[in-house]
Amino acid sequence: MNTKQLIIKLGMALVTFSSMNLYAKDVFTSEIQVDNQSQVLGYSSISDVADQYDSYNMKAMFPTYTETSFVNAKVNLRDVPVNLSYAQNSSTLTFKIPSLGIERTYTGATREESKDMFLDALKGEDKELLKKLTAEWVKNSPIDPVAGNPTSLLSMMVGSMTDNLSDMASDQMYGLKENSSSNFGMMPRFGRYTQQGHDINVYNLPLTYSHWFESNKTGLVLDLPITVSKTSDGALSGSLNLGVGLNFKLASTESVNWYLMPQIRGGVTGSEDFGTAALIYGGGLSSNAQFPLNENSAVSIINMVSYYKTDSIKVGDFDSGYDLQNTILRNGVEYSHVLHKSVAGSPLIAKLAYARTDFSGDQLFSELSHDFSGSIGFKNKKPKAWIDEYRIGFTYTYADKDLRGFTINAGYTF
Image (cartoon, rainbow, N blue to C red; front, side):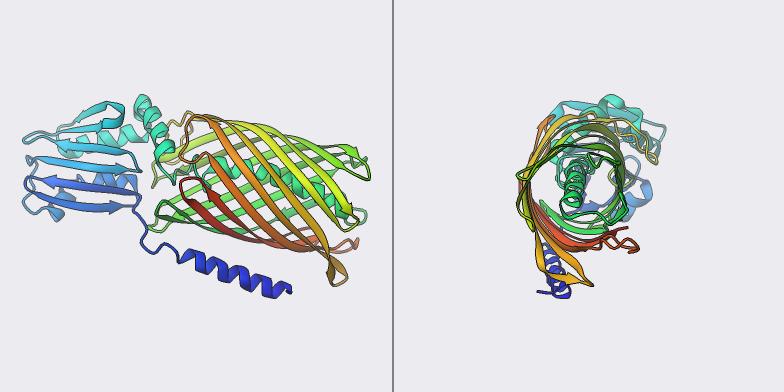
């Protein structure tokens, strides 16, 4: 199979996968009762949930509505059931989270003012409420942007740690470009995920820099993945994170090459639609034991342990007060092989890999995921070559509670 055929097959697989869930859920839903009438509505933004209680919007849905009407709403606030209500002849908005035993009241001169006070609390004014609500979000929501699912920032930060070490180990195994010890890289990725009825498109651009020092026994890696995610009903979230790692080559024999990389990472994610903002920071230790089978192939055993914590940060109007602490283990195996094919005299290298990731600590919606990946690319070792390596690939992810996704990527180092 040539490179063009592989790209076509990967594209067809992604199209097939993206059509699996045609009827996706809304991020937020409300069942609203006004006097003896009721309506069920869906929203893609948390602000729209609150704005539903503007007089104009209420009258559009319920022509008999007045500022003195009885209102009761059962709201699915990102898979956390809550209740919003106005008593008859009252401007006080009552907010309840039955599962947590939480009740708040917001009383303004008008119902409009009460609604604004409620939204201000969700934006960051009520820290105690948000700390409890965000803990429920990561436990109950399959699409939380911060943690608990494959499209969350925490999951992406964990994957980046082992990816960087694998790439640097492969460079050592199959050779760097002549008279060059540094690489810049970019690997655009597009992913399509289905997570408990929600369809999510993920656009990711990892930017990397790696450098082997003169002895070739110590290396530096920096990476900056930038990500934008969009649900099928239009809810947007974005994130970026920065990782810094030092790669130590602890053993180099005919039977094994062993690399160890301590790494620190920090990232931020935010979404006006989800009502979310969080800072994640931490780090860990990755190991890559590479066992050459012959001059053209190798098997690598990859292990990682890391610890991450979330903290408060304001993004846009929201400071949602996530407070998580998690320890993550990632273990996997990778097979790489130089094919009997070349591109412009440069060898083609194929990789197949599997990784399992386990999350412990504060409870998350999904605490176990499996990644199956493959790629093919060529290395150009000529000293005047502009591109050092070009690679295309795919990853299929399956996590517990029926979360799954497919990612394709293509990029190069220079």
